[in-house]
Image (cartoon, rainbow, N blue to C red; front, side, top):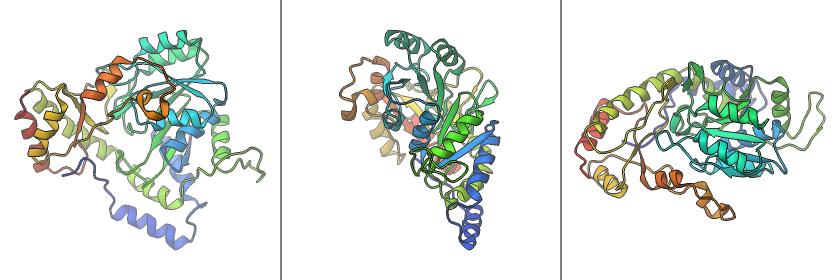
Length: 357
């Protein structure tokens, strides 16, 4: 049993072989096709594949004209790439606290923080662990400050918010296809948007600033996805709903087990469909829980042990964010991925029901 297990099989191999046989390992048709298919899945007009999730975030901010002198409000409880992308774009990250139940941005803290800093230019909301952030409330705050609203959906492929797919809720949305995610391209990312101009700027930025006439009109980056990665992604996308359904089934079994303990199970807010990239419980004595699970042969992981504002790279940030800091001390993620066998699920549930604080 493992904490994550990418499922790459014959469908992916067939698509990879076709790309290899074509001789177009990059710059062929697969990247554009994958972008279109993923955008359709998110019910938006454009998908621009990138080299990874971090470059997707950076490119999205650049395409939304967020950069030098701008302020981006985001969460301290995420992988550090969320804030790093803001700094890569030349902007300044400002952190608001999280809702202790969902681990996503707390709208009340967002509103207070935005007012305290005199306004923000963008809000970068993370759908952590696959749980959709409160986008209606965040949109209202963004509109009040005339700020862009960007989704960091790196962990939320297949999640929905009041019936709408994650990825269709902001001015742009960014996904990661790292091997541990709900679907993978090996390495890769994508930005999806309904804005034609933003999409044009994205394609230009990720390809050295090249415009439609082949001129390098701006200074961009090489953030392109390869055709091999896109080919894997097209095969994975066809299985994404199946993957998410399996994660949700496993989560329900874990919910039942956690209900008989003092652990706090993840929540699924009203109107939301959690995609369970991680199944994350909360335990005041996390070390004891990890040791207990290890005795039962059940792997676990901490996402994330250090809030971003307490990382050494952010030691210039002066912030007190008690809910994020408390969560970092108590959260523990358990196996929930589609590769778990019925026996694996039983092993995890047994270990949970036998845990006593």
